Amino acid sequence: MELQDVGTILFTGDSVTDCGRRTDPRAIGRGYVREVEQALGPAGPRVVNTGISGNRLVDLEERWTDDVVAHRAGLVSVLIGINDTWRRFDRGLESPVAEFEERYDRMLAALTGADGPRLVLVEPFVLPVSPDQEDWRPDVEERVEVVRRMAERWSAVLVPTYRELRKRAEEDGAAALADDGVHPTPAGHRAIAQLWLETVRDA
Image (tube, rainbow, N blue to C red; front, side):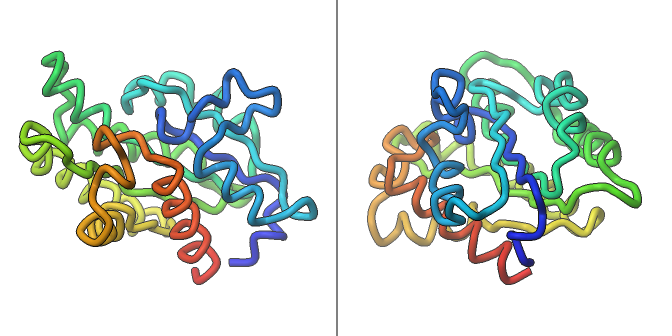
């Protein structure tokens, strides 16, 4: 995909995308979105970040029209799902996978049409740094499968962060990429940005 031609790239999701963008004067944050923007350079497309820390999919759907659809971006990139797992384990907030899939499908349907954006779906991930996070993996993997089905259904580019970050964690250690297993370190954000750019450019 030729990214210079898309006009506006919109990234949305949870804290992994937010990464301080709401206190950043440029509203980009200090994570992988900034890394992508810097790689594209000053002549690249406009980059918009509407990630909000703590969001589950239900929260993103509630603001989908204002924070995603209304921007009429040429490309929309979504990374969401880890909080649906995390809140299940630490607060008992259920997010049934079947409901998660129906909701995701409904959101993407709102973007389709002749003038709809190109879609990039980024797999949620956990890089366990504690024994309890190992217990999360089956739930996360079910949501990764949902994202993969959504990518196929909606002809979206799929960024395989779950698989690729796990491979890198085996080499470098999980904490080097996400010191709490979820929130990327600077090295983790660089890895996500590199994978995002390589995958989307090759699509």
